[in-house]
Amino acid sequence: MDDHKIIELQLDRKIDNFLETALYCPFGFPAVITVKPFTNNTAAPTIYWLSCPYLNYEVDRLEAESNLISELGKKLKSDAEFKALMEVAHQRYAEKRKQLLSAAELQKAREVSEDLYRMLVESGVGGIREKEGIKCLHTHLADFLVEKSNPAGEVVFNKIDWPENCKICKERVDEFESSSN
Image (cartoon, rainbow, N blue to C red; front, side):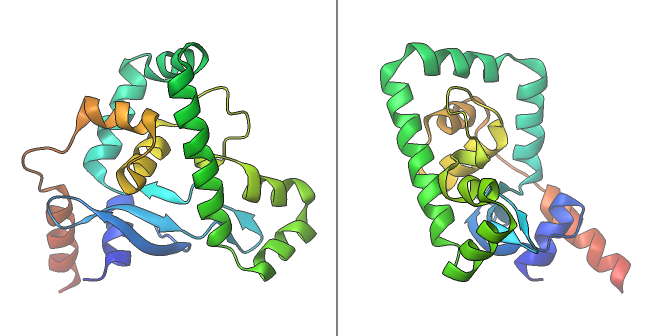
């Protein structure tokens, strides 16, 4: 089965802006994907998407049960080194997004709206514009897993890590294949 179909099973929905699998989990399944940043006149500023069901569940749990977003926001304001590393991560992310866009796509985005164009070329991790806070732990984790240089994502990963054994994706694939026969 190809990655695109596995990712749709992981996310339980169709995905039309899939570019490639950016990272596989230790069990051989897609964990982070790269998506097209601009499709059908619509922006997808989150270029790295966490597809791993286990990590998505764990990050959801962290966001619901802890004050981690708030804690990281405070750290961003009080820790100059953390802030500088986040600024580098945001700049790198914006550059990667621009590299994924052709000149024609950038021009089309500008024709749709100057605000859309600026968001595509200037916003940071996950499309954040105001870089004084942390918005989505999922996108920071996905960025860290691929690039190994997102300090917020590293904090998240250190709190959850990979499981010792995981069968979620295999079970979804097996279920799909048995229902298709």
